[in-house]
Image (cartoon, rainbow, N blue to C red; front, side, top):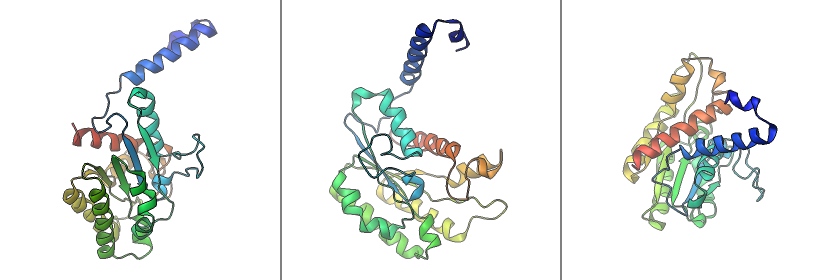
Length: 234
């Protein structure tokens, strides 16, 4: 939009506004986002994104992939009245998620539920067997409450430059893939996404501490989440 600098300030502002509207309108709606859809993001600190704990709309969704997704589609399709929620909690394992499942998931009655959990389970000694059983249990409860619920499962990932992915993470990634198939969920594979991205530049460009994405990494994650969800519900 180089031509905008030659316009008067008022005309330039209008031009930028309409350019933004056109950009948003070029975005195709996601089939899974029905009119009035309630979309809930659940998980640990990667989902939490330092979200606010009040109703302040400036901070309620945090500053990660959940915010990016909600901002993009909420702005592009206001007529659909999409409602986005973030209930990620930093440091959570699947056992913590189970304890707050009723309040932070079932009572919100989501139409689409996205979950990413597992990296803390590996670090805090939750066995793979307990991880799988508990994860399966809470997904079953969500399905029982709403048989039409759309599920999105996101695999845990880590980036240790020059080191293999820990076996505990690999095992949990396999569990997530297994549960996605069992519960009819879209599966977002993140390990390969960040491995491929890191091959193009330094790891800390995308993930600053082996676990938490940078703002660039969150954009990458949001784009992959959207790609998978679009493909799964064509």
